[in-house]
Image 1: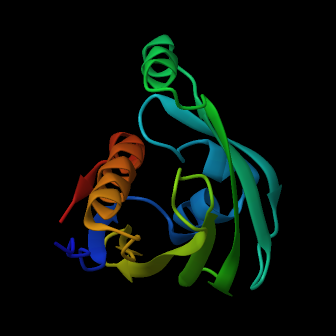
Image 2: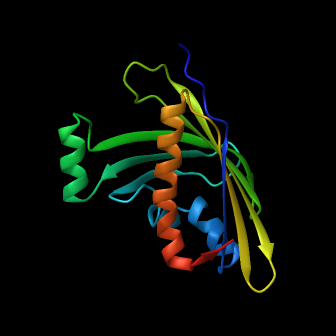
Length: 163
């Protein structure tokens, strides 16, 4: 029986924030580290080059006692190196992030693609449209969605959101 792979997932938020502030969250070390990673994790950025073809290297680190215990109990590392690059970088309106998924047991390395569009809205709002491209199977695509929604909750709390 073949498992069906889920389609790409589109997540939208409208934030009361400046276009420049939202762009910086994705394209600067300080901005990225301030929110990237699901609840219980943080990103430690080692290299970020804000340009088309620019590198993005960081560690995803479990940073709460509960998450460290959960990762340890599952036999998973508490820190994972993540490597990618900006395949497209059109400030401050669009970026495409390609990350190498090379840390999953028994799965050949492949690229994960995230597209982000930033659209100014009336009244000081910005609409952020994120497209998460499908992973190698439906289960992992669902985990990607859930993890991204968890990390997005950090921005939701910071800026409030509506849609």
